[in-house]
Image 1 (tube, rainbow, N blue to C red):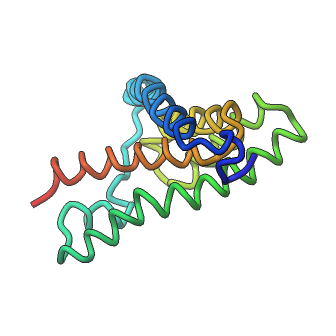
Image 2: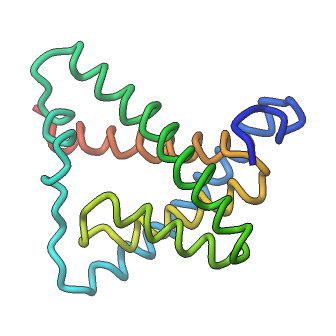
Length: 162
């Protein structure tokens, strides 16, 4: 699994296909997981994420721009390198694809430190791992992750923004 275009035959169109397709697949899976999560009496701790209040009500436009870039570009890059590029790949070598998907996705969800969103982050992690596995690289999973975070930013700003 690599970070470059080699896994996609050097074609950005393949990365985009996997990115848009993966995002489209992620939506129903994450929604179903969120519905299941809502049946479990756990309180979501979204305010524990210090970036969300700043995104909703930034002190200035520059801060908001930096936060948006961090959430949509930097976080997907680093998280995909860690969880799919390194952890998933190492687990896959030792335990097979299925176990690697489950373990890497559970750890991905756990590091977000919110029991109230664990299942839908787990579902997203599963989709990201499968996209990385099936596409042969992590550029596509980075794109799916960036789309997901971008939609989250849009919803946060539109619902909670001033």
